[in-house]
Image 1 (cartoon, rainbow, N blue to C red):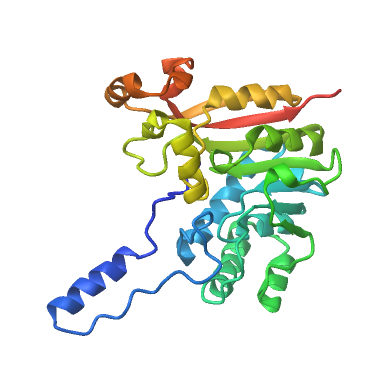
Image 2: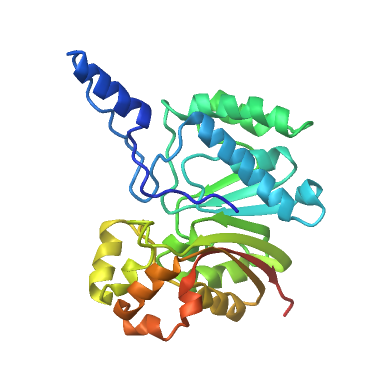
Length: 307
């Protein structure tokens, strides 16, 4: 199963906590906690440190390759859209090295962080050479040399998916996201744009996390909140808690926009918790079957049908 982004991960590492405790016990001065650098937002936090981020980029590339018909050879000359790039562009840079062109769409597209990105891309370059023999590292080299998210074959768009009007009809061969669609603000408009820009026969892979990101131990609690209060919460936290859409709702909108849809659930609510929370969910969600509410995560595989 594709790992989820843990939206509740603290910026303060366990190692730093231990260091603080040891310093306090020894009577040493405690350094101030390093605050996240400017450019990291609640909508796009720094979630993974360097080695973990490298592993995540490699894993994401291997996940996509494993889903493609023909494996990595299918990437040659094709345009890949990543929705929700996150804290780094390691994944699309690997795809460029394997022959693809990439477009990144993210309303909270990360800025260059001189304390994180230079070392990350150097480590990723070394790992990619080992994990993907024969990979072309030109795009990674450009990012490292320019000290900026600027590379041939990579277009970045700091907007929501619902606003990709400049992308031509039928221009995308492959689209991919991991734990992104649950954070979209306007799902019908976003998926309508996705349907427009995907070429006939184009394919998409989208892992969606349907949990309340405020507390993964109580993944359906946000279904108990009144709509008006929940709208205020979404604005306050930049949609980081999740938008409450269930997989059946996503499936309907994908189909309405011209996609054949295969959904595979891969995360489920505990039965005891589901029985406890169900009487308290808002009526609009009680129209959805209990079995559908039980699904907390899964992958959509999409193919654009001909007109």
